Amino acid sequence: MKTHPIPTHGSTVIVVLTMSVALTILATSILQIMSATLMSGYRYVPFTQALFTAEAGADFAWSEVNKATKLIPGAGEPFSGTNWTKTVTGTGTVWTLTSNALTSLFAGNEGASLYNVTVYTPNTAAPYDGDYVIEATGIVNAAPKMGQSEVRRTVKLYLEPEVTPVVNLIGLFGKIGVINNGNAGTIMSYNSQNGLVLPGQTDDYRHWGDVGSLASFTNAVSAGNMNIYGSISTGPGGTVGTNNNFNMYSGSDRTNGISDNLTATIPDVHLPDDYSGSPILLNNSGTAGANGGTVDYKMASGQSISTLTVTGSGVVRIWAPSGIKMAGGSKITISPSTYIVTNSTSTVITTNSFKSKGKTYTEISTNNVVSGTTNYNDLRVEFYVEDEIKIAGNGLANANGRPQNAYFYGLTNCTSVDLGGTPKIVGVFYAPQADLKIRGTADFYGSAVANQITIQGNYFVGIDESLFGDDSGQEIPGRYVLTKWEEN
Image 1 (tube, rainbow, N blue to C red):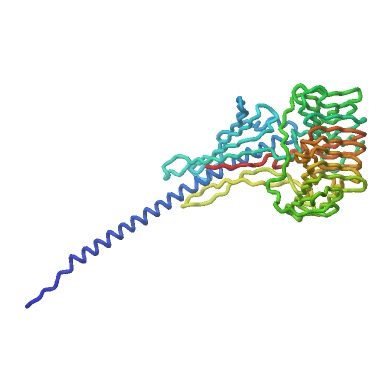
Image 2 (image 1 turned 180 degrees about the horizontal axis):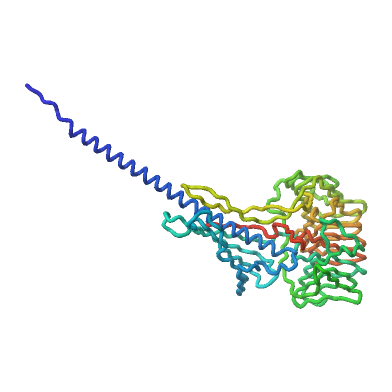
């Protein structure tokens, strides 16, 4: 029997066709993936750039908020530049900055960006010392391949005033009043960067030694026998009591006066949110310190502070549940171990070009840069005090002579601050629930915020302008702090 081979040509064709279809599908999938990747790249660059642009606008507005709270003569209201628009509503004030453009680095204006900023605060008139909300939108001209003309990203910042002794730049501030029961005394201002100004050095007295109260009654500030190189402010309807020995001085740096339109928010003090859950226990007469970082201490159970030494650099935070109670030969010594150069800080918008898919794009970023040659030391001691603060005897020895080295915060159950006895007290006191007395022959340098302030004896008070920023334009960053950040 004769056999014939089975034809295989049809099978080969089917196999070839199947492989061709598979390869076509694979090639199509690869092309789709490559196309998607390419489009993703096109989208990523302007999408990211729009976010950077929005952040630049938000940072710029934040710096303006802080700048507006500084002691800068003639600074006027915040956001007073020609590009800002102000609107007062029934619930607050809104400032708007529209279309602040950032230049594109390549032809056709593709990739050019701009930001719009809106700033809101609940205050309807100065001082604008409430919370702020900043909303900034970054807008970028998108690549035509994206099928859209622009990309938008938005960031929103929520700012609150940092708990500091700065209250509308008033150096002595008593919520319910300021009482002068002393003989002829002097209140003036100076800048601790230039050293202490001693009593009698009148040529060096500056004119920002302000006194204020929120009280709205007669003699809210009792200023008889006072020689003040500053202004006095009360709450609406409040008055200032004076006598024939009262003198108010103005100078070339400022014209002073009396006003009754003071409003302010005075927040209570609590331990910092990041205060350690396991602080170092500290005994009275002990030594505390830090080495460039932040170190938290707590006084041992039942021990108040009467004698203490703090050294080093960085931030030392001391919680004193039983208070500070000094008498006789007791002393708190603050001795910085190192000095650094800390210069004035400003926010600068910078650009950085980068390439993607053969095109050049612009990355927008912000950076804090420093300039100048101001010398500071870098030790900051913060006392968080319950019960009472009493500084007497040999008192407070602040080796550097700058109030910024020693902050005394009275917590909500601190109801008394008594300063006297020592020739000089150099520090910052913020105790909004306490009655604060400056008495005896003590010379006080720094600033103070309390429920009520009483001045007794032959006093000399120097308000340190460097706590606020001085009239040379130097600024202290961080007056308003970020509490929440949103972006979309």
